[in-house]
Length: 195
Image 1 (cartoon, one colour):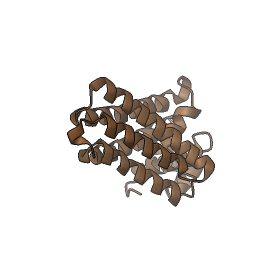
Image 2 (image 1 turned 90 degrees about the vertical axis):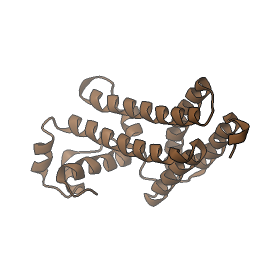
Image 3 (image 1 turned 135 degrees about the vertical axis):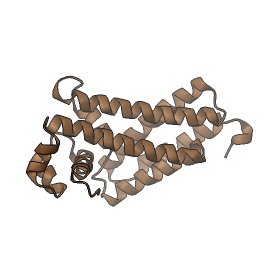
């Protein structure tokens, strides 16, 4: 957890979103979870829960983007495997209680009203992940249209698999998605780049 109180609150909110969604994340519980005074939460986030949710989704989306972009330096197959390995560890370590805070907000909150900012942040995160995957695939020699489709399929499959893993208490869905997606990507690569 970060040392800066504001960052600690945002990181704590992202963790709570991953575990229970926005509806189950109260400002009071969040302050306790982030080990900060309740007054600090209102001081740093004067717009309240909607601002905090938006910033938590931005924080989580940025964290995943940074990790994905770094992993993709080794190519699309190894990059995907690295992302899924981190996700698998997160699921197991949390005893399948934590998922993706970005996805949590995207599927439980409205695109209008007080949560619109958080949902917009989720949409931007998904787009950024897809872009990173598409660029990596194109750089590896995959046709742009194919790369776009594979990138979208990868993000959707990854997020769906995390939800299924949480429900089942098992990594089965993530393992299956990894096998099929790495096969799909390998098949799409030019022969000299097959790994």
